[in-house]
Amino acid sequence: MPKQEMLEILKRDREVRDILSWPFDFDLSVSARDADWFQVKPEADTNILACDGTGGIFLLYSPDQRLIHLTSEGQAGVIASDLEEGIRLMVAYPYWRDLLKFSGGGKLKEMRRVAPYLERELHGDQPDIDKQRSTLKKRLSLLEAVDAIASLHAAVSTLGKGIVVTAPDGTEFESLFNTFTVESNPAWKQA
Image 1 (cartoon, rainbow, N blue to C red):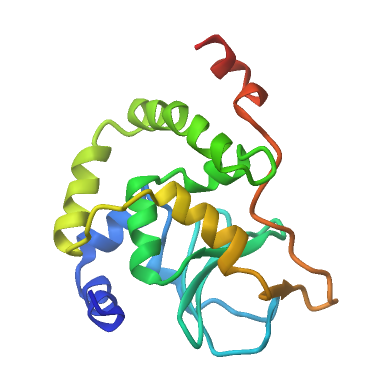
Image 2 (cartoon, rainbow, N blue to C red):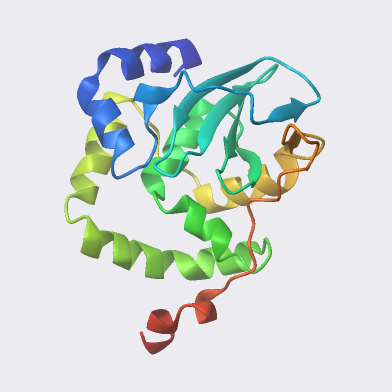
């Protein structure tokens, strides 16, 4: 689906916006956030699209409209090649941030390993998640995500090369990858 068409659906379909806001943590209602707390280099047009529940933001970065996520804790990176790929990722893996957190420093194998634990927790917390996923796929005409974990890994590790996000004082934001693994969570060790 062309980006403009998807943006129009996101603008006019309140149920889609509400579902994306929770439990997918992609809140389009507060996109007009102030951008004075970061800079993206090389300089290009950016469009703040949405925020998450912790104060982080999602922006589209020109010229090719990559989707970048900036956390309120000073991490940033490209998470998808475009808006549609980003939303497919969020629908398939609403816990995509935790896939990065428990990646063992950016290892695809670790991201795949943690996914079943996160999916089980998601279903325990959000019993309607499959219905919500189905609604979003239908209303946004989303194709099935083809190996979205590998796409996320590639976006953060490769698509973001050469793109640097800094704070006003010049401090570079850190990678979205973190060093935790499945073993870092005591509850998962027992499962």
